[in-house]
Length: 269
Length: 117
Image 1: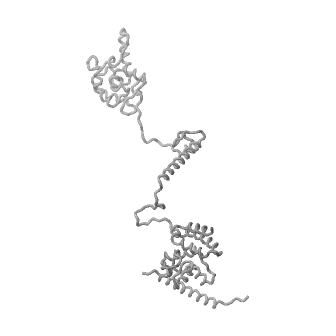
Image 2: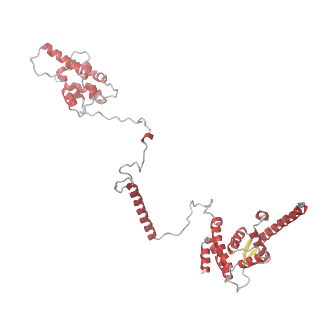
Image 3: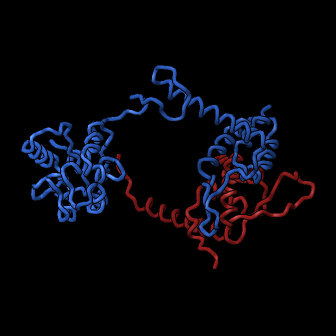
């Protein structure tokens, strides 16, 4: 039995030392059979094992001249079953860890990777530490024209209706540029000029006094911003010259200087 | 160019005793232990672990080398070791160093005045 114990202590030595001197040490142990020296040999073997591992075992090193950038302690290839077992254990442990993290919030969560609902004890966020910063990218969102009032206004003022080719209730730069050509389309009588009626003025009773009718036309042309800038000479008609100059005139309504005219800029205040 | 023996000095006591034991002839491990005990008159005893730890280092340093087995009927587990030329030069240098230490020590002791009680 004591010999087996000594052999076990020899087995605790590093492989290199054991292969080189193990048999000889066991032979010396056998030489002292029946003597009390064997007990001291046991202590000597235990101390030797510690000494060999702690002081004599060379560290794993990489030779600078070799091309290998790593060194494997074990060179054997694991069995397929061992690999499968390892994979299964890894999956179970990963699932358990994920489950434990999710359950830490108190309520029973779905088993999800990541956080479906943020919990302060999972991902504490100090919002005070988040510095406010000015946005570096400006995103222009077209103003919505889905407004019944705007639609009705564009339908009533024929000048706007004909200029708004894409019917988005915004006069784009291109539509403003095309104004001289498009305005001629509403010249119903073909006289080259756009009267208040051709611009959209309409009054039901035809028995209105001439003076009042003229005043109404004048107010109509003055109250609607687009007509007011187009009728530069305020004669309640848009002359051929004013039609030719319509692009420049319309641009004077562009208060925000974005190149287009939106309902805010086109509708009366 | 052979290495300078001085780089191995001073020798540890166990190393010195092992080299002294191998100075006369090639010995196996158990015989080295017995020879060390004999030379030191039983005051210095090596265990197998200490013996082979030192032997491993001496083999790696090239002071000792393995020798052929002199007797065919010997225990096949036994391996014999002997000093090579470097080991012999190192042992001689260590003995010379110790002689200097002994001589200087004697001179110092003889020149020192005894204190009166």
